[in-house]
Length: 328
Image 1 (cartoon, helix red, strand yellow):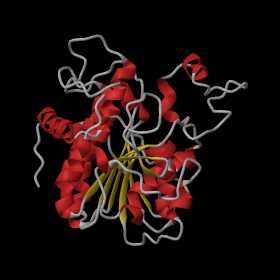
Image 2 (cartoon, helix red, strand yellow):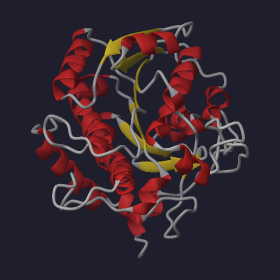
Image 3 (cartoon, helix red, strand yellow):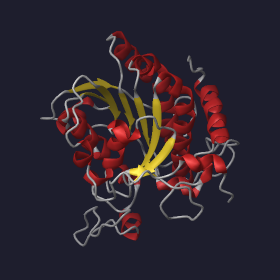
Image 4 (cartoon, rainbow, N blue to C red):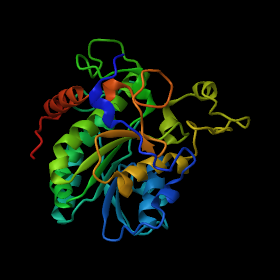
């Protein structure tokens, strides 16, 4: 793999944060009073921890959910949270959610795209799109396009998409993104959707920067959350994520394997920290901008996931697939 000069943007800034940093530590003494955030997936796992951190600093946080009862239970006692109905696999639901938010005439300062599915069996949405691509990328892509007026109005918004080191497994497949002509592989589908998340941040930042809207993608680390619900106990055992009691949990932690609190830290860092003022279009991990690498299973991001030409190519394909153009 050739590392291109244009990716010198992927240079760590010596933030002072690291793998043991928590979301609460990132927030510190920041005051987010008056800020509006939307966190998809904000009622479980990393999204829930991010919501708690943002709300603790005074932000008003809107959490869209497919199952409102489940979200209400998870968020009980968290101040400043509003619940809304949203299904990222349903384009009509996305449009309706965005219309309701825009009708409130509020600015949107933070959009944290934390919802996702991993290694799911082959399922297609009503348009025929493979579910991991539809949920992890296309649903969020449509959501951003619909919420763009509120993001632009904030004059300083940030969009954060949760990616994964799994993107090192595969570049995006532009020829057959929905596995229509080849056998489905659940891990390849996941990896490509995570590559799409990183490419989206590059393309979105290019379009958003003139309006003060910056975009980031994040690898949170390897964490046991509800994201692993499609994995068998044998698969989790092979990952070291099943303890002696048969519970889904890691027994040892390192720079990659983290607690949920630690995993949420880089999401929150990208969403609010002033260290990233004036920056964007980068892939982050461990509370800093990641380096470019060509070595699998090591820290850093592969060139194919931050290449501006590939990002623009994905943007155009995404517009085509959802049948909607970005109105700048």
